[in-house]
Each structure stands twice: as C-alpha cells, then as structure tokens.
Length: 253
Image (cartoon, rainbow, N blue to C red; front, side):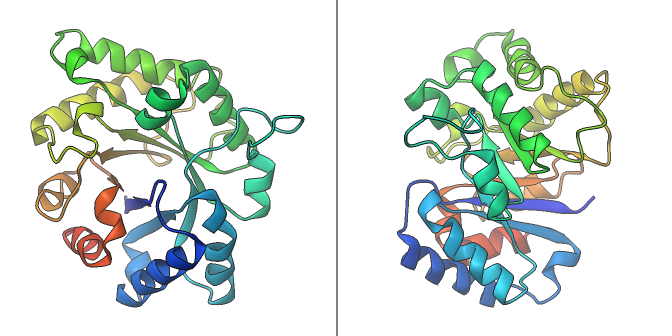
C-alpha cells in the first residue's frame, strides 16, 4: 500500500503565498513521486481554488484536501462551506475531527459523524482525526476512549458507500509541541483501532489507511513512516517549510 503524506497548512498563508509554496513543493518533487507516494496539500479555504486551478492546468499528480467541511449540506448557515462546494472544486480529501476543531470550536463526535457521511456521499475521502489528551494518556483506559471516539465518528457507514477512508492518529499532547509518542505507542494505538474496525462491515484492508500526525519532522519521520502499519503522515508545521517537508517524503524507503 502506497503511503499518503498530507500537508496541513492550517491558518497560514494568503492565496498568493499558498501558490508560491505549492509551486516550490511541486518543483522539488521527483517526477514519478506519485507512483509510490500520494502527496496531498490542505491549504485554507481561500486558497483552494487557486491551488486547484494549478493542479488542473498543469495536470499535476498532487492532490487537494480541505481542512474542514460543514455538517450542513446547504441552507442559511452563514460562514459555512458545504461538501457540494468542495466537490465542485474537485477536492479529493477532507480533514475532519482535528483536535484543534474539537478544542477551539467545540466540535462533537456527532457533528464529525455528519461530516463523514456528507463526504462519503460525494466520494471525498474523509481523513478522520482522533487522539487523546495528556490527562487521558495517563489513564490506563485511554485506548477505550480512542475506540469510542472512532466508533462515534463512523456510526452508520455502509460498505457499499465507502470507497476509501483514512484514520489519522494525532495525540493532542504531541500536536505542535515537538513531542511524539514512542513508535511502540503509535503501533499499539493503530493496532487496537484496526482490530476494532475489522469487525465493521465497511472495513477493507485495501481501502482503509492509518496515518500518524503530531510533531512529524525529518528527525522522526523515517522511523514512523517505514513502519508497515503506518500508511502515512498528517504533517503540520513542517509542511510550511518545503525543505523539511521534502525530507519527510524522502525518508520513506
């Protein structure tokens, strides 16, 4: 299974800066990179159209992701961006349930579940984030918390609807802190989630990926990304530096 590397630019860069960073990234990649690694870029909403135009015009083998989507499909919801609007921009992936959304915008597992269903209905791959706080990590039952978080986010999924889905393990205490869990911790969490999901009707080894996020850097990416159970990475701060991001990609053997 090819690895998937997602660059989450978060609330950074205007659309002109985003174009410059994207073009620098594209020029820095090997021409045949898409044969072994799927590279995905998630800029802010105001840059999606600009990046999409470049990808389409130059027939680039890079993919575009949204950082979020509304739980509502249409209607009087000022400030929201719907899955239909993303579909028209040919968005391939969408991040949902990121800890920053849960923490700062009070997103619930129920609203995340609605978003997941909306995305799957439009054939956009949801990147479902889940993770524990440092307080929960210290609790011996933290794996139960993670399983419950995942279970609520996928409630009601039907096998005939799910083409592909990505689960991103992002321990809250590791995001932007420079700290990462041990490789064994990462493997244990993903193994447990994978075992739980194996009982679900939609689960398929070929269309379900497990990636890691949380202070991914060139210093730790080789160990994490060359582990068989880890299918890629969701990269935050390091993705804003093309040299660092390329080193992360090149660390995949």
